[in-house]
Picture 1 (tube, one colour):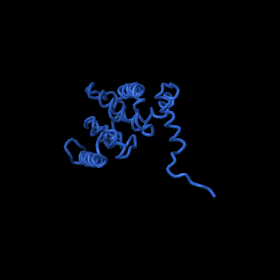
Picture 2 (cartoon, one colour):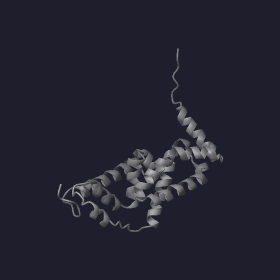
Picture 3 (tube, helix red, strand yellow):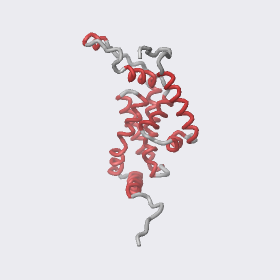
Length: 192
């Protein structure tokens, strides 16, 4: 008769936790494996928050430095992914706050070379404009949910909120985005 183990951690979970413990003990190879496993997710979240490649790279680099110093204090090694993403999101948010600047893109040469089709990529331009208008905290919330694919419970742990608070904040934010993207809103296109 075959017995089925109940509440046994998956082999990959156990390996991941062992990797975190080795990294916490100063094993640079284990830490390098964590970087290989989680760097891309951290960069995606940081990019959504900063909107700029250079700031993204700076935020992720800073996050790894912090993670190296603090990994020994990680209470639950099974939560390493959300912990690392939270660090990257916080660093990106801090960078964006410190380096508030307006980026001006010269599009005149592009317009001369080929006149733009009024409907071409309009929805993406509208979405990008609305996202850039959000504050860093709102962008972080969207990044944690839709880029890092964290659920409300994981986001709540990262942000120090309740899961229901995260869901409420996210619902209000999504309603606001929908309203701002609707045709006929001030500053929006009406030629759809």
